[in-house]
Length: 488
RNA sequence: GAGAAUAUAGCUCAGUCGGUAGAGCAACUGCCUUUUAAGCAGUGGGUCGAAGGUUCGAGUCCUUCUAUUCUCACCA
Image 1 (cartoon, rainbow, N blue to C red):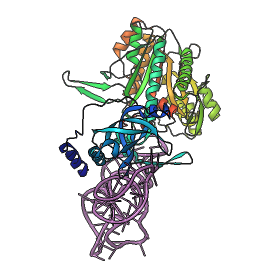
Image 2: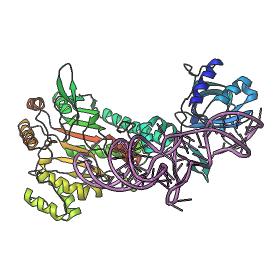
Image 3: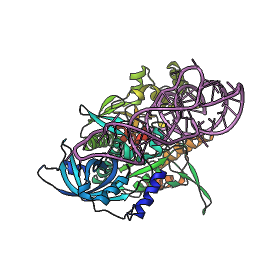
């Protein structure tokens, strides 16, 4: 590194600006290769980072990498002159250069750029890890790949330079979000923004991050969900609203959880959860086709088909199917015994709904690899969902499970302000008993409902998990640029 | 929060029974005008994650700490 600092000074002394302002780029690596025609000496101007250098005395080959890929450059002393060639010899892997020249094919058949002039665009002072690759029978073999996961996450910029598949994943993530946004927008729904700093957090069962507003001298929370604000907008008269939202939950970290994560929430007036299931099927299928060109993805070693319709089964039926026990009509005590028979150790504080959720999460969910709508949850587990139109004690709610993990959560939204108040107040009681994930009574939200909210279907989709599924990535850290790590 | 594993050169990794630190690539110096893991000859490069301890002597054994990875718990 010391050497490179000296080189930078040396270049400046010899009249080369190591950090010029701009360079006129006319094309990119993959376009040159794609549109190459042998008879043609097409003039090009291209820029990128030097990734390999092969010096052979008075001529050299090197590869540059731009945002699309790599291309080989041929540089000959006779063409660029003694001074320029001497400057070239001072360059390092990692430096960013601009080249003007023309396209040609080498003796060994590689489409390349014959440089006529080149210009240093940015001097790199730190060596980047070099991964060399070789074609063996058409397969790319990579040697000495930059693979230390901690460094890859801490210094994602290097990961992106050195490991092209990482870049591809994030490009696909962007395409997924762009497609979903277009999907929602063309249906006529409005993209909105709601507060991240909230005086009362709500909309989910989770522990929040707290922060403090100095001027107002008040405690604020980073949102755990945006549900209650979006429903206020439905009260306000919008037919459909959605928000791609960073949410924050103060909980453990593993390969499915990051403390900040992205969720899209959607609320559409006059619809119910049955309608929403169709929307989810259509959305997943079309997104997969749009970004992958196929409706099948491979995740954790399983082929998953996203072709509608997805299987639908009630949570009670799913437990009957996978555990062979019937939970229908059982009270808390009976459910507790059932769970014990299945071998589950349960906290004595949790109620009937939570017991069902535990049984489901332990024995059913991991087995649901193909996309499956689990429907009709116990009311107790779902304080914001509307009572089922025909089944007592049950709400109109579904979760979509795929690859053994929850991807979406949705319900026919509860819009009876009196019932909603009762539900939140019983949450408050759970809270007093020590359940720090129980919800808080949000008086303004209840006031909004009292003015009248139309029937409404709501949906939340975990974007990170959806990207994992569609990209075949097995860790959430591989679909978030900068996953949370402890400080170095 | 619990358990297991890992931490050695810029990167990827060896390092035997405790005896003065090794390789490939990268870097540096030569040679080389169509190479592609370019080649050939030579050179330099280390607080062995941190702090203690045992020992004549520690990369290696012991203790504590830190970070990461994986699994489990909580959660989406």
